[in-house]
Amino acid sequence: MNEISRRTALLGAALLALTACGGKEDKLAPVAAQRTMGITVFPAYGATDVKPDSIVTVTGTYGRLDDVQVFDSEGTVITGAFSDDRTAWVADRRLAPSEKYTVIVRATSERGAAVSQTSKFSTLEVTGKNAVGSTLISPPDGSTVGVAQPIVIAFNQPVINREAALAAFKVETSEPVEGGWYWIDSREVHWRPKEFWPSGVEVKVSESLVGMDLGDGRWGVSRRENSFTVGREQIIKVDVRKHRLQVVRNGKVIKTFSVSTGKPGWETRNGIKVIMEKVTNKKWTNTAIDAPESYTLYSSYAMRMTNSGEFIHDATWNGRIGSANTSHGCVGMRLSDMRWMFNNTIMGDPVVTTGSPRKFRELWNRYQDWNVDWDQWQTGNFDLSDG
Image (cartoon, rainbow, N blue to C red; front, side, top):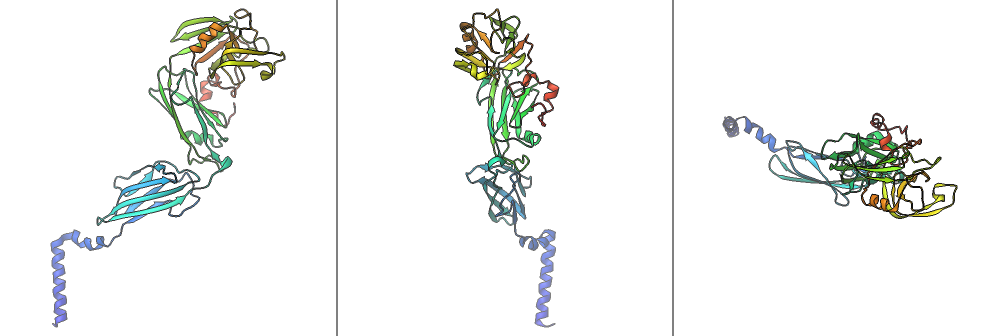
């Protein structure tokens, strides 16, 4: 055996001895040491026109993810969650249209080495009629409302995919309340309970349309939330035939007033209405409602019940309050009585009118919600067959 052969044999014996002592794990160690950690980010680096409903994901191989940061051009952060073994991270919400995003990943390889990667991409530009967002959530944040107040979300553009949009709306209550959404028209959706709200319930309503595909090339661009509280239970009852208004609080009549409602041809609508607005020093003119008589009158206090112009207000010019119906659809009261009503009524209080031959039918005449049968309300009115 020459020297080279002898040394080769000795090296082989030494390696065999090391393998025998090291066991199975050491046999794999040289292979593992050669593996390099890989990080994959979706959407890919430099991607443009990314659809907003894409979800950012990060995966790592041959190591573990330590930290993932995703933020837009204004620094707004998108949060997410890691898998149990920290080899994957998934964002918990959609992207915004017309935005640029940065993704920063920090990780540790199998060998304990620090690994980092930065990625950037941009989303689809969405402008004009294709950008759909809410313009308001009502009632206002922090308000206290009556038991008939519906939740209202209004939009800047018609919502084409109305059924899908409902997935972006959420109503949370401090106690269980059965209720549902109903489209009034393509730009406004309401949520109401099956019955009047329970007194004292706390409500949080939110919408998260950002990045939602709303059909016909339109994308959601808004995110907002409001919280409100339902106040004491108070129901205003108007009896057209008896020329009487009663205030019922917590099931007991606490006040009874004489009133004058709409005359023939201008009858006050029957049904359940909701106090929408309270104003002082209200001016009334015949031109505002196309009445044939010419007049300009003033009320110190007025509370709106419909978009079409039904109010409860003081009518100092009316000498037949309590004995005849002479108005153009409003509920007229004496000044002192109306002052009490104004000071003891809040937005969202229901007004239940009975005894009139004219029904409250018009869905557009906010808020007609409580006059829609509950079975019908539960359909959602996605095709706006009643709108």
